[in-house]
Length: 61
Image 1: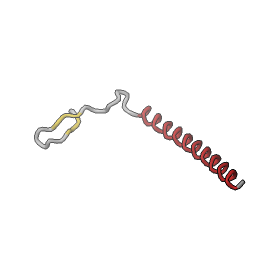
Image 2: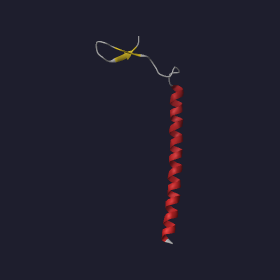
Image 3: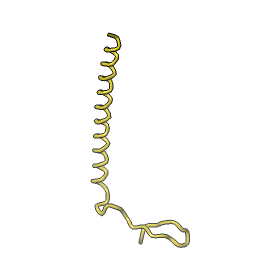
């Protein structure tokens, strides 16, 4: 009987954890969607060009 109660407790705990993870994933998805809506409409930001002197990428002027 103890094993049955333990198995039931594990099942309920597992279900609770899965639901909690789903809720957290939905919250993260909502945050990402809000950030994407605020982002540059072109999608990628400014174009970068390689500076031959320093070897670093800089925004195109």
